[in-house]
Image 1 (spheres, rainbow, N blue to C red):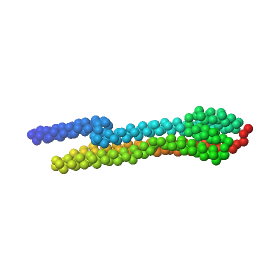
Image 2 (cartoon, one colour):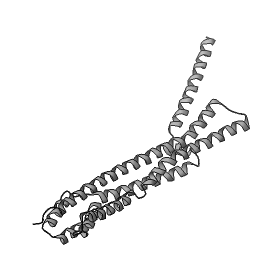
Image 3 (cartoon, rainbow, N blue to C red):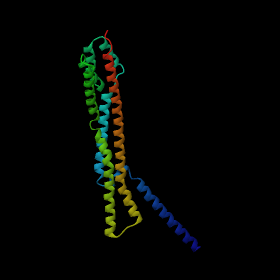
Image 4 (spheres, helix red, strand yellow):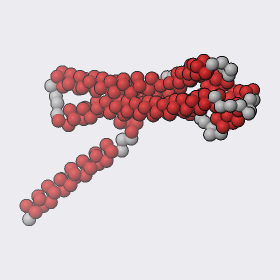
Length: 234
């Protein structure tokens, strides 16, 4: 009988320990993302700044590129009609009132109407290069963020690991759980840096693809404009 009660007490103690562990795990799981990020250390601040910069640059460049590369399927058809009928003034008015890279390039070509085709092509090419430069402006910032954000993350992890092992060497006290917990905390900065770097790099590549698409559109419009100039007028 005594053995039975002793076994019951032992089982009760085990159940209490299990419940205590479950409660501890539940408390740890209640940590939100902000609490986890704070544990990453001081270098999480520059990482946050890099993330804000990357998001701002991406949105600003995306809107600028979208505005510059916006195209109207009827634009070149109307330009063709004006040029064929000899109404260069109306064609220039349309080009000036259309706020796109293609329109500004066509307007430069219209200003050179009457000159040799080679001169018109060069002037339009120069405007195209200028428009391309405007679209590429500040996109390199995303490339820089994509490169240095993981480095900041690794630096934070190295600094944290140095601090962890320094404390162990100084106190002589260590345990597997303490070391594992310390490593978990210090890896937060590395993970954050990699995520920010990936976001910045993907944004950079996407903007470049949009710029390439706009460049092809300008080249096609330029070739079409030269063909229109060589058509006989009515």
